[in-house]
Amino acid sequence: MQYGGSLLAVKDVNASKEFYVSVLEQKIIFDMGEHVTFKGGFSIQQNYLQIIGLNENDISQKAHDFQLYFEVTDLESWNSQLKNIGGLEFLHDIKEYAWGQRCIRLYDPDMHIIEIAESMESVVKRFLKQGLSIEETAERTMFPVDFVKQCL
Image (cartoon, one colour):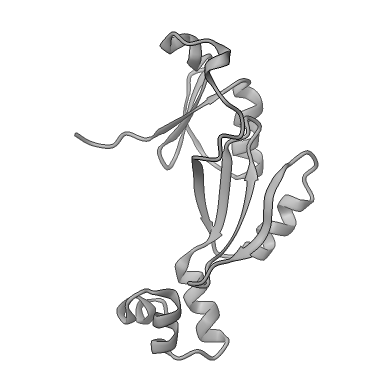
């Protein structure tokens, strides 16, 4: 068996397509009207509930048990860019975790959680630039020393 990707049920495929293309800069590889597949392996599908034989009461909004994860090299720039787009609902502003990675989370038009995080390579480079040694950076990020060295 091979993993084939994730599919998000959406109410308005055009609104969702606009969000993923214009806001998150995702590239469409297949657009079949009510079904759109993006480079990276996720898809959006309008009328999903009808396709599988369920009704609208069988889906919840803001379930908070699933997210799509995207990585960037410059989180500050993305945060500023997103803050200038009206109508976006954020789950939280920039948040830093114990391993040093920072992220923001927001909702797509159908209230699916979107995480936008620094790549770990960017985190490593930031720590090294701040003066941490290779070993200190490896310890802080919980990544092997070899990974830290590859980021130089």
